[in-house]
Amino acid sequence: MKKQKLTKQQAHVGAPAQVNSFEPPATHDGEISVIFGGKNVAIHGWDGSSWTHLYTWNGEDLQFTFENTYQKYHLQSLTHYAQEIRVSFFSSNDIAGSNLRIPTTLAQSKLHDIEEIPVYTAADANKFLTIMDDGSLRWLEENESWMIDGSAPPSPPSGPSLTIHGGAVNNGGLMETNGGYFSALWSDFVSYTGDTPDNTDFTVAFWWKHGETPVTGLTPQFGLFNGRTNSMNQGMTYYIRDHWTSGIRLQTNFGPSYFAGRQNLVSENPSVDHPWNHFVFTRTATHTKTYWNGAQVASHGANFPWVPNSATAEIQLGATEGGSDSAYNTFFDKFDIKDGQALSNAEVLALYNEGR
Image 1: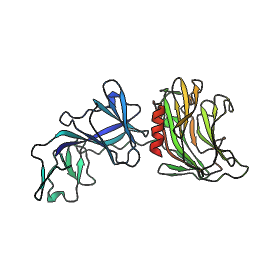
Image 2: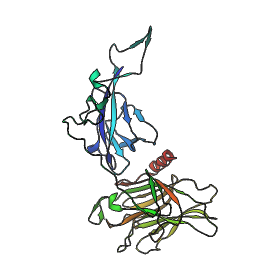
Image 3: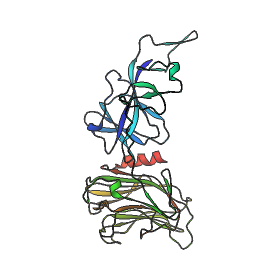
Image 4: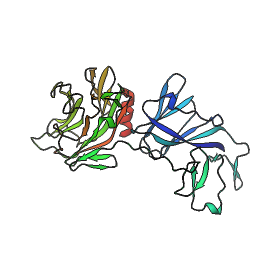
């Protein structure tokens, strides 16, 4: 059997950074196992010169185990707030004399020996084996604190909330407009100093699906996210149109004029009955890019920054052009904004494939 050390690590928002990385214990230089617990994170490894993406949670796996071949590791939270993740480190060598005998057969077992498990006694009935904040283990009752000093555990940080308008419904992240729409402030997702965004790199990603069959002669239209304010026409508005003959079309409004730069970026024959579509929008200091179902469909220069210079500007999901309730039903899922990170073409494709 191998030694195992179970720890709690922090998954940080933003691009991988050494200041937020961790190193395996010197005594446990074998495999590493990240236990997701339903938390949306990505794993990166540092080889001494650059970061390498190792894995992004696919929404199903309970854990991901990999060989310890990097100097440091970074857990990236793919939500808008830090998350606590359990990480197990294993020794590379078996413990001497730990071969397990089952009846009369010598068997090399996959069992692991977790260091310092406290003895379970009758007094520990109905208690749970708990990882303390220093990484040690104790048997605790359900309502007991896992802080060594006995203090109350810190409350987990909460992500930004979306304001619901009209009949919209948020079913645990799967958002249905149902005749309404959702809104939030850009500053809930992006850090600002005054009215200036602190970063130049951003990514907006989500899945979208139309919930109704288009009606002859009508064009359902939905604003996806809006950087405009009443006093500052900055930013960009995306619209999805689903026409009864021409199919899905993605259109954009850039710049200070409401109709400036309106472009048709996606045109798809409606041969499939309204499947889920994946949209990603990235921005850097030099360009903006639009992706549809894993493929880049448009690129623009620095003149289209789309993240507004206004901390009070709104993001709107499912609104019509005027920022009012949607006349048609539509769905959004896995909406996310990465502040300080613009995904590469390969990362966008990987995100799409994982979501499928």
